Length: 303
Image (cartoon, rainbow, N blue to C red; front, side, top):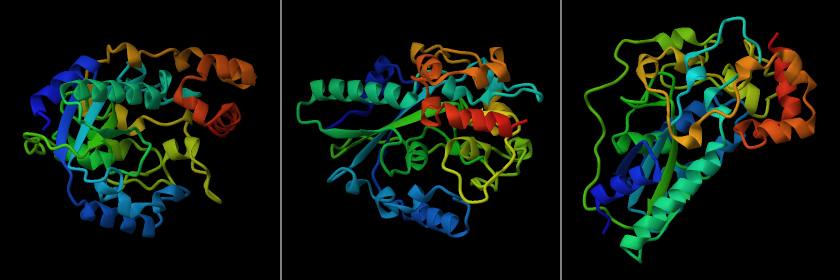
């Protein structure tokens, strides 16, 4: 049997800023919300969300006999997270200024599992970082890490929403489990709603057809041409104004230290990049997903 204190201690040793442990349970309510959200057309071109909906609500579909979900978070706030000037072009979301978190967090989760297995050779689990249909934000809430904010992101008391999540799902039981927070929340604050230039925030869910982050990264649906307001990859508008994010400390973990500063790049420099230069300078970042051609298109659209 896993021990809650051991899991959290090992997660800290691996480098995670937060760790919580939740008991697997039926997430039918979240499944129903997702289905309703999709039916109302808020998913836009994100067709992949229509697949494996039942799996998202049942962790045993991912790991046979699943009983425990370990949710780990890595804080990533940097100076860019506080926002750009209104005249900036070539804006990049702050999480994308560093090495792709999918690799970083997956390696950290594997190391956590290796250490847990050293305590109990029978331990077996699967690790996920955006790599499986799982309601990760809901499990983060169940594990006591934070709550779902009005902008639909997980907000943590200490690090705001500038956190990246990864999960370990296992059939092992834990001696005790965390419980959701009940003393904090967004209250009456609506700064994120007011800050979104396209009005994409609809009270704890997003209309992706208006979301700049989706428009700059995901496959475009027919007729989707929402204004980009200077962004070429992702968007931090709703996060930069959040009071919890404003007071959150900048991350010090070497895994999330920025490897470039978009403020130092002009539009002309972006447009003059060759494929080879892009791969050399930005190939290890999340921007590789969009590719140079898409970034240049976004830059032209963001005038």
